[in-house]
Amino acid sequence: MPGRPTAPARVALPSEARGTSRLVFLDALRAALVVMVIVHHASQPYGPAAEGNWPVADAASSDWFVPFWTVNAAVGLGLLFLLAGYVTALACDHKGERRFAADRWRRIGIPLVVIVLAVNLPMVYLVMSRPPLGEFVGSLYEDGWRPIYMHLWFLAHLLLYTAAYLGWRWVRARRGGQPRRWRVPGHRAIAGYVVALSLLTWVIRWEYPVDTWVPLLVLLPAEPAKMAQYVSLFALGVLAWRGDWLRRLPRRVGYPWLAVGLTAAASVYLLQAVAPERWTSVMTLGGVNGGSLLRSTWEALICAGLAAGLVVLFRDVVRRSGPLLAAVAAASYAAYIVHVYLLVAVQAAVAGLPVSAFTKFAVVSIVGVALCFAVGHLSRYVPGLRVVLGTSAVRTPAGRPSVPTSDDVASTGHLLARRL
Image (cartoon, rainbow, N blue to C red; front, side, top):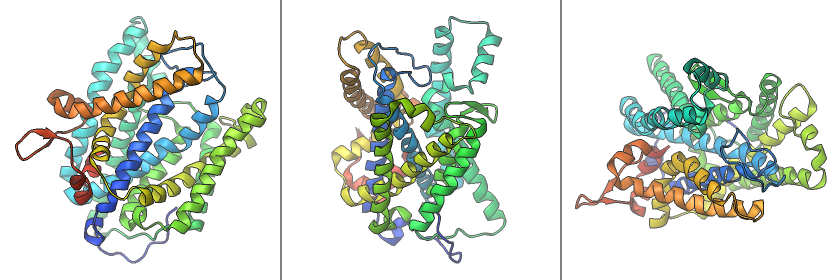
């Protein structure tokens, strides 16, 4: 997706260039992606085989959740990494490296360490019936530490990518380099990204099929099969800030690629509809074969198409903020952190109901999304919980906690910079 660099120049911040009122669409897009992740996990007990040893089992099942998982996994977290890269560069330019690093540790590092060590680790140990310590640690390491990180591996990767970005800034400063403004990508650049991502993902999956997890740098869980997407989109998010891509990407580029992404996603469902028996041969998880290459290409088309298209769509549709959007945006980060724990409780509560898998999925999705954002919102008023969930109180002139106003979000963009 990157375009050609122009001559080095000082990069004007969006607030300097055009005002920041249109940054509210990024809040809306990020909140929508968090909802997508919550809904994805709401479906876990109801597929033919729950992904990742989901803690709740349910007799209600449907094969249609397989394409649902496939499409969601191809774009949801990848686009969150794109926005995270954009926000990382934005916040670092606004705050400076030291203040930004401290703020990022407070908002991401502290919640990650506290929840992984104080919540997940004891919980998993008890669920595994308290095995010998060496056996317990060995089993966690072999599974890439995924059981104790669970969905919070995303936060661990954000810290890692942020550290890499700060290291790159340090090296650039030592060499006296200046940031470049990158041209807004066009059709050729996006198509080139699709080709490169497809091939790189395919090659990685020769050795590491989908849902194979390994310990990255000893301590972090990683799924190599999808890391080409995650790392590249985070890097492209940084370039997007430098070139102001998210506000300047033309409709004539974004909407055609939105159509490409939606068509690719629809074709995944079409495969399930017309030839479900061929799913495992066509959508191969890995290996040196045509099915794996086809799946990698399919995912890259969904990823790039929706990444470009949804940015333009949300930019055109969400032009102003309001109290509801401001509250949802402020709660979305905490909602992501708590969503698995709340979903498991709701899924367990409906497990015995004699209804279809889709009915249970709908109930869990609606109740789960409402609960997650409610907890995220209320956490801003509880001092200890604010620290654990990485949120912060917004105070009125009288000193009482309050949600941010639409003017707060629209006029500064700092809420966005502080949340991911």
